[in-house]
Image (cartoon, rainbow, N blue to C red; front, side, top):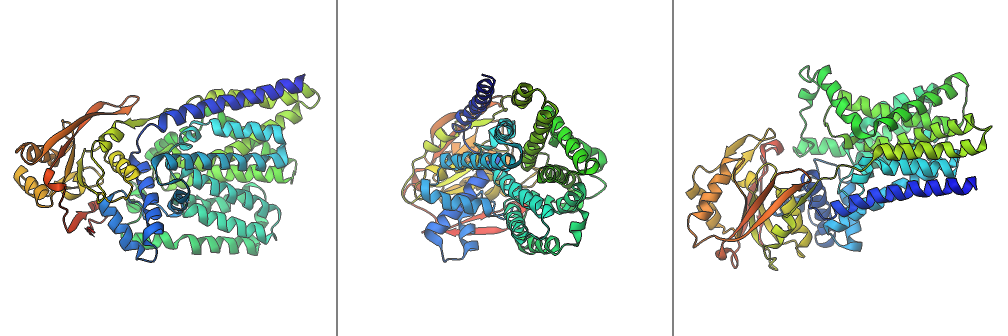
Length: 547
C-alpha cells in the first residue's frame, strides 16, 4: 500500500508540473514574439531560406539581403548553432512561429530525459524522476519551454559537457569522455557566448572534486585546447567584422562598474531559481563536500554532484567578472546541475532514514512536492494584437514594401515576425523607422535623418512605400511625429485602412497601431532598397535589389 501511495504522490507531482506547462503553453502560443525572441526566430528562418533557395551563394550577402527585408537578423550578435537547428527543423514542419515554439518544448523534453537518465544511474528511478519534475517546475523552464530562445539548447549542451567532464575526472585516461567534453563544449559555445563560463569551470571542478592531479593529464590540456581553437574563431571574426555582441568590455571591466553594481546584478540573477531550491542545492553541495573531503568517498555520484556545483559557481563567477546581462534566464544552464544537487539531498535523506523504509521512500516525494509548490506558476508576458495588425495588410505574391515606426516598445519585432511567419514566399521588404528615418543608439538617443514632414513624405512616395504602420501618440521619437504629419497631410496618397488595439499582457499599457496604405505601392516596387544599421552595429549601409 505504501508503495502505491508513493507512486500516486509522484504522479500528482507530475500532473502539477504538466498543468503549469499547459498554462504557459496556452498563454505564450497565443502571443507574438518580441525583443530577443523575434531576432532568434528571424535568424532561424533566414538559415532555412538559405538552405532552401540560396545554398551555394554567398551566405554573407544572402544574410544582408534578408536583413534589409526583415531587419532582425542576429547571427553575429549570437552564435549560429540554434539557428542551424531551427533551419533544418523547419524542413519538417514549416517556418512558423508556432513551430519554433514547439521546437523549444521538444528541447525541454529532451533536456528532462537527459537529467532523468543521468541521475537514475546513481540515485535510482524514483529520485531521478522527482529531481526531473523539480527541474521542469522551475519558472524559467516553464517559460523557456515555449519561448523562441537559445537558453535551453545552451543548457542542454552544457549539461552534456558537465557529464562528460565528471566521467573524465574519474577516468583521466578516458579519451572518449575527453572528446565528448570538447564536442559538447564547442556546441554550447556556438549556441551562446555565456558558455565561456567553461573557462573557470575546468579549473574549479577538479579542485572542488579533489582531482587536482587531473591538471597534469594530457586529456585535460588536449580537450581544453580543442575547445578554444574551435570555439573562438566565430567570436573573433564577428568582432572584427563589427557584427558581434554589442558590449563595451572596457566599460564592463572598468571601476565604474564596481563591486556594488556587480553585487546588485548577482542579487537579480540569483532569482533564476526559487530560494528553497537554491538552499537545497547549497545543502547538496555540503553533503557532497563532506562525502569527498571528510569521508573520502570516491564514487561517481559524488563527483557528479561536485562538478555540477562547480558549474553553478563558475557561471556566477563568470557573470560577476563580466556583468554583460541582468537577465536571470542566462543562468538556465545552472538548473540541471541544481537538479543533480537536489538528488544528492534526496539520496542523503533516504540513507539517513534507512531504518524506517516507509519514511525513506516518502521523504524525497515530500521534498519534491515542497519544491514544486515553491516554484509556482511563472509570470507570463505576451504581446497581443500584433498578429491581427500584420494580417490587416495583404500578402501579395511579390511582397509589399512596409515601413514600421512603433517606437521603443511598440512591437516592431512582433509585427516583423508575424509578417515573416505568415508570408509564404518571404517577399516583403520591411523598413524600420529607427533605421531609415533616424539613428537610435544603444542608449535610445535619436539623431533624425529628416527634419520636416514634407521631406519624410517625399521619401515615402519616391519608393513608394505601400504600408505605413504607426503607433498611437504620445510618440517616443521625433521621426514618428514627422511620419504622422506626412501620411495624414494629403488623404489622396495615404489612406487609413485599420486601427487595431495592441497590448502587453498582463500589466502592460493598452495602445493601438494605425495602418496607412498608399495605393501607388500596389503595383510598383523600387529597384533598390537601402537601409542602415544602427550606430550600435557600426552604422553600415545595406541594399537589396528587388527581383
